[in-house]
Length: 141
Image (tube, rainbow, N blue to C red; front, side, top):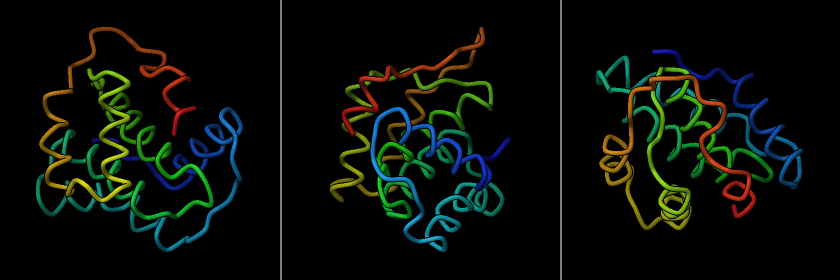
């Protein structure tokens, strides 16, 4: 598996803030590091698959509040990009992904419950995708 690195997540966050507004900057660097490494640690120590690792990115980046702004957006985008760089794509609607991320942010779903929904939404890529979710999706968060 190919994992996101801190510089990747920072760049994704910068682009999301530039495109959809908000304040740039890291609020808690240690929380960011922990959220980013959680997926790779789960793959290494628990043999977690792509779906579980994607759910881990979504859950931990959303919950960590590591950024000043855009924590829900980075959680969704990191999960989606992680899946895509590993040859898959999230085959779920914008509304379903939005609901998932909002449930994480509100504390209404556990990490295990979020993980349960990701495998059914993953599909192997048969062609290169540009970007799965529309800009309207990220603007809502």
